[in-house]
Length: 458
Ligand code: GDP
Image 1 (tube, rainbow, N blue to C red):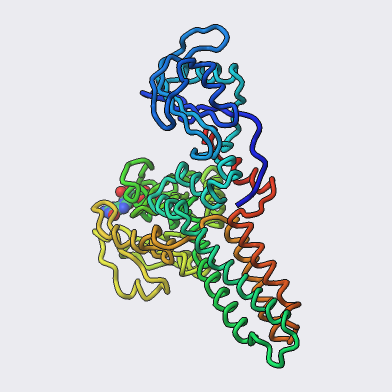
Image 2 (image 1 turned 90 degrees about the horizontal axis):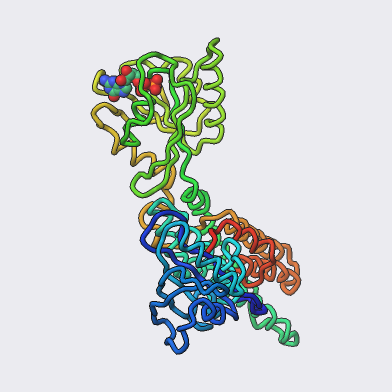
């Protein structure tokens, strides 16, 4: 945990979102928090910590009563930030909380920056950096899967795993240091194979964590899933069926889905961004042509593609050409309108990628399609993401790749007979990368990036 000078100023913010609501919560944190509170609520003296007290909240200069609110005091270090902190519940809405905030500022507090409370919690050792990120995910997450991963991370699931790995690297380093300290021994007290085996085990475990990264990162954005296929192949109908609403305009005229429609949807708790594109075909129609350009851009960025071919229609050269250029691990072929025509085995054989038959009008085949999408987008982390640590941010993946590469370099150096004590610099670097990940030593710009995306009042 970082050792940092305690903040010298006192910050205040409204922690709840603006708008009509029964209550709003304000927070004040810093060495002057209780002094600021006493200036707007003079009757606070003697209230026990962590006990709510209903008091009149006044402007410190005019004495005007702005509201009556519930105040709770959390003396340092037993607060979220680790500093003296007060929470004030006022009536909700736009004006009352703002007037109380103005009073807090007039009483000597400063308006908090986004994420500043959590940043202080981190700097005071109440949270590590991975936990702080999990707090942001709990607030911003829209899928149950990300929520479960965030709760696990907030409970230090990922931090503990990284600490174990770092601990194993440091043990290997100390084994090497021990060998150096007893150079007069004929046999080195620690056989290099032992160090090598321990470090190779760490490497495997880092690889296992890294394997969760691509899908873990998708939990935040959602898997970009683009519907493609000829005009009239049933894309919009399928889009609507997957959304469960009638948001896209479904039409019988080929080529009228002019632009892309995007919608966020969770399937079984996992996030997807579904995109319905214009029919992919060459056309002289300029407006439709623009839609097709949009479709191409989406296809280039897609995590998954659902390619629609009507049941009973033999896949054409255009279909085959499209599918030939796609990664089967990221493509689902859907035979649409299965209520109208049974899919012939010959049709199936014509394309290499196995297909799912659906009838969007009746909903048949949708569960199978959903399962296929889940497998392709999140197959490595399906099950319960709350059970095992997941790598959910590029920052984590970058640090772990750095650690992995350093450990691999250490092993390669041993293979090349480099003396262990020299090769050990790689172990130091690997341990350092893992320390950065947890936030043991962190530079300000990393903190700015982590906390910059937070909301004010958190
Ligand atoms: P798009 O151009 O690929 O988006 O295709 P649409 O979704 O607009 O569908 C084209 C036509 O096929 C429309 O008349 C739909 O009502 C019809 N259609 C789509 N899915 C089904 C289905 O599952 N069964 C039947 N019978 N008709 C469908």
